[in-house]
Length: 329
Image: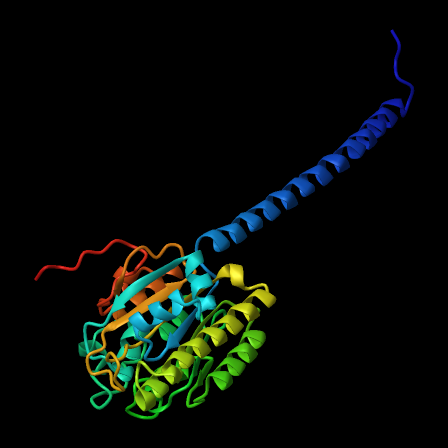
């Protein structure tokens, strides 16, 4: 019977341990690579879910005073190529105004999803500050966190989209990253928007962009005037500039754009006393129906992942991305 020499068993154990170490390192490296691959796949899936599901960004563009029928005529003549291109990627739907056809209550309804009984903004002359927390801007800031999300408003008008004490956006402006109004001209508004897109491109955002040319020219020259028509063409061109900027920054594929109006114009006149016919053009393919002004805010909130049915007080509008039958009584 052979017996191991002194120290022979220890040397065998040491050799075996060295062999195990040699085998262990490739296993550890393989495990690390598998873990990293898994994490990369998860990240790519999450990114695809952002692209294919919820947007990272939304831009709401207002064409103040854009009458639906006149927009239709311009589209038929090929005068609004950017609006046509945008809606070809998503939808172009009718929006009907069920309350006052004026700027102050119009944008208050669009930016909150509430009727005047909640916002207190009934007309250009009868209004108050919208209660704190009720606008799309504030709800998104609360939902995502102010350090992780950007809200910007770049506005042509001042009087009807004001933020002074007692004006509609007095409480709203303090919760936002940027609230800039009284810029007047389309070119000035657009220039500021492009600047802010550069500044905030690295965070998810909601931009509200307000162009006032159709309303201004309509009041001065009338709805059937060349000046009114040219104002719609100008709105379209500046909308195209914003789309181009989003594409240049690599943001367009993760950005939904909605173009709408607060009111239309009385046919052939320089007033909008009874002008309830406007529109919504968007690259959002999930918009499935026509609606009213109050439906736009819940549509945006829904697309960002908020549940509009859980908001208090309950919204008056309903997402355009979901079927809705208004009550008959």
